[in-house]
Amino acid sequence: MPTRPRLPALLPLLLLAACATPPNKPFSDFDQATRKVQLSTGNTLERIQHNARLNAVLTAPNAPLNPDTFRLQTGSGAGYDLAPALGQLQATLDTLALYARTLNGLAGDREAEARVDAAAQDLADSIQDLKRQGGNEDAAKILATAADALGRQLTAAQRQAALRKVMATAQPGLELLADNSHRALSMLPAYLTVIRDSLLRHANFSRPPYGSWQRYQFDLAIADRLRELERIEAALQASDQAIQGFPAANRQLLQNLDAPASSLQALRAFAAEARRLRDFYRELPDK
Image 1 (tube, rainbow, N blue to C red):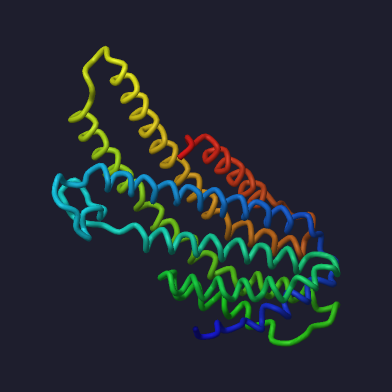
Image 2: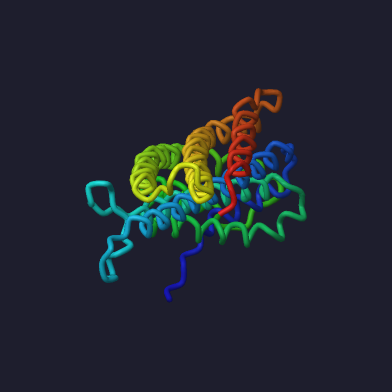
């Protein structure tokens, strides 16, 4: 297996910020909110894949099994594959989370220096994975360039400047990732509609007689599935809203380094979306 390239530039930037004195609280909040978005959206993507597999089994033809028996297909029989879009979205989420964690390490106290190398390598690996998953090539290059600024050990006095440089360099890449994620997330509700319509067609075909206990149990299970699909679609919208707010939060945090009294409304909005997204996932029924 080839060795993944390291991003030496990011390490020095992290080390720069570790000894400076910018307030760490906003960066800690940014880190925590991004982790919530990563976890909740990742769980929602897993639920989409889970429902797609259930639908593939539900719609399987009454025929001998073959390698294509359980492939995902639309109502017209056309096949589709969710794996590339879901993999790309997960890679983007992982990269954003590691980026926020890296900033938090840069803005932290001296103890953060011991964690900087690991954080930098994790981010480097995540960017490489983003490229393998078909993520935006320009965004990956920009983030790699931000990391390349950390090619040498930096003094304590340089850390805040390094933090500023990393964030400014990464900003265009973050905006590209947000745009790319928006396009991918906007496609998923159409597949949820395919799953829902297929579920209803087969449910109506095999629904037990009215007034029977079997009918009650059957309808309850279908109602739960329909409710889950509704909540997944709402969660996707919340994920999109949160990811779209990520670049603005980064920009305001960068501005706050030079003007600590400046507004951090974008960061507060991003954190609020992260909490709302977490609540959406909590409302989903158990698998």
